[in-house]
Length: 148
Image 1 (tube, helix red, strand yellow):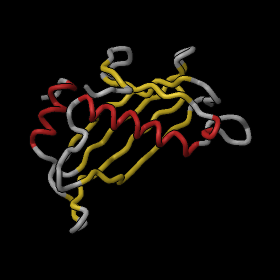
Image 2 (cartoon, helix red, strand yellow):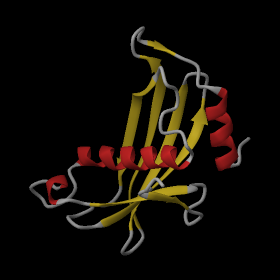
Image 3 (cartoon, one colour):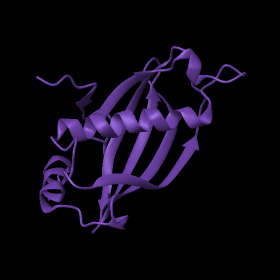
C-alpha cells in the first residue's frame, strides 16, 4: 500500500486532485508570512502526489521531467501553521511538455492564497534533449481529467 498525501476531489472544478500541506515556521519571512519562494515546494508536493495517484510517479524509466517555466500569482498571505489545500490539474499536454495549473486555498476559511502555472519538459538527461511524452501517460491523464 502506498500512502498518498493527496486525494481525488470535486470541491474546486476544474481541479480533480488536491494535496494538503501545512505552513512551517521555516516557510515564513520576517513579516511572518510565507516567503514567496516557499510556495514552489507546495506545488511540487501536489504534482508528485497527483502523479503517484495516477501510477505515474516515474513517467519514463530513461527520462525525467524538468521545469521549463513557472508563473505564480500571490493573492493573500499565508501564515505559520495555516493548513493549505493545493489543487492541481494537467491543463495541457504537448508532444514533449506538460503544463500544470495550481490553486492553493487556506482550509480554515477557503480563501484563495495563490495560483500558479508550470510547464515541465520530458528530457533525456544524458543527451539533454526533449523526448516525446509516452502515449500511456497521455491516456492516463486523459482518462482521469475526462479529456480522453
